[in-house]
Length: 277
Length: 324
Image (cartoon, rainbow over all chains, first blue to last red; front, side):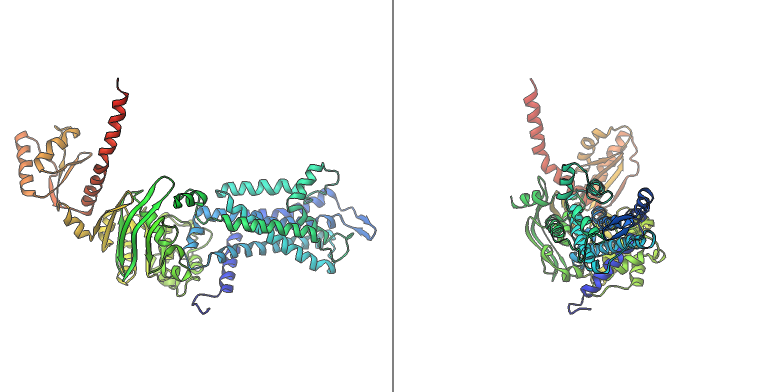
């Protein structure tokens, strides 16, 4: 209990996060696509690409050493960007956001609970991915690169959470949000070194990959597991670029966020113009 | 002290004026009903008072604060039951009460709130499994969770069966007698008549009448005569035949003919005299004290009449212009 008589901010944020995680657990389709599907991909990749050892100057490594990190990063993006871009507009369409705005809970704490739960899901998903890699596919994790991996991961999930909120802010309805999130992230994944390393790809595909933040994040996180790159393996330039995207997302989210279902009343520029006329 | 003060409130959407120069006040502890048809401006008004919408102009004060700029202390002291808003369907009644209650300074206990809302048996049911009426009761439960000083109820019983409505009325009445200020919107006249200390009638964003239900009924003609249209009279002729007899405007709805009258004895005398002479039976002939519904109908038909001259003129001009 704080001086104002309200429960403390920490306690409120904790409660919100716990409840968002509980609601996530109770939506089987969200759990499957966010956590299950990437793990299935890891299993399939190993079945498809085999486990031929890859020889490098520093030794021989399993193939999984070169894509498990990328898949883990992709899981983190699903848990933050895709998850938030799906769930926040859904809650808005249902009118849940509007209901919360009428309570004494500060609005940023409601959204904070959403974001913290998304980050927690990202941590769980990436950890599960790496654990499966270590246990089943001889993934080697170097202690000296763990700090870089953690820093890369935290910057990445923050940026993609902000971008998920930005998409949630600009789309009209939950159904278009879901379509938009997948239409953005799935094609992008193919040109962003998530599933396949692009060696002989056309130049324009490389450019597309380089412009968007998915590829720099995936490659930076993968670098933390790449045996040919030595510690600390933190990719300053790439992660700086990801952070810039995140800041841009944050600005859009702050500027455009809406609490009411679309169609209930004019808002934004049109409403302001009318109000001042 | 006024719990709610509204002066010259205007709300303009792109091309419609939803609320137009609205002035009214609600005293602390009072139950006030805004009555009106869909689109009359009830929800816009109540959402401005809740802080969900910004007024275009005018003064709006709830608990001496401007709702649009008020913070969490303000929202701790009000309760909102929106006309339609979702609840997290994955959670149980117990969970939402715990989750939402956790944000208030001194929330009601789970037991108290489910008992008040009549949800005892559904306490561990998921919101998604509840019926529409039961969900509405969860809305009510969440509205009163923080022991509000002012409770906003936007059409709280729409879609309820009669028994559920009565239970909600009991709840709202008990809150009103506890000193909670209640502002409710409704298009059920019996609801307003039953619950409200005072009623404001809204039409096209304007307050067209205000007072206690009693005052409103007494202000307009206090008596209504009604009967079924005899088979020998076509509905279109009814006003021209019966209006002179009863000495007032006549409303025809289906076979029901109604008129609000000032001098029932003379009117009924002329009416029955006409019927005897014409040899017809006036089925279900009744003379009764006006209800709020009669008042409302006579008020709203008055406003539409005010506007018709304009509409008629423009229509006749168009026709005149087009005819050879």
